[in-house]
Length: 87
Figure 1: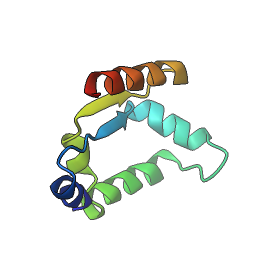
Figure 2: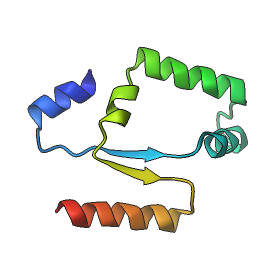
Figure 3: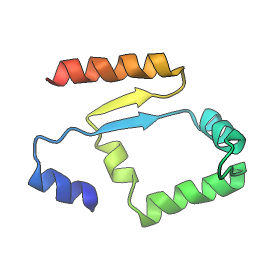
Figure 4: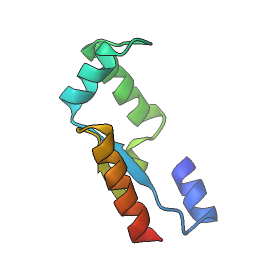
């Protein structure tokens, strides 16, 4: 809903989606110092966000994707490539 609202008002909007393999994501969430979740809790939250907050649509319609499975330097490099391409 929010994505449709934004794209209708700002047709030039470009959406960048940051994704990571599930196993890496679940490991990171379990190990973070603030608000860690175990695998079943994060799966429940992810499904709830897809079903109730409609996060699946914007992810599917993203113009660009950054794979967050590496270190921060790699993600910054990917972002710079996107920004240079779209300017």
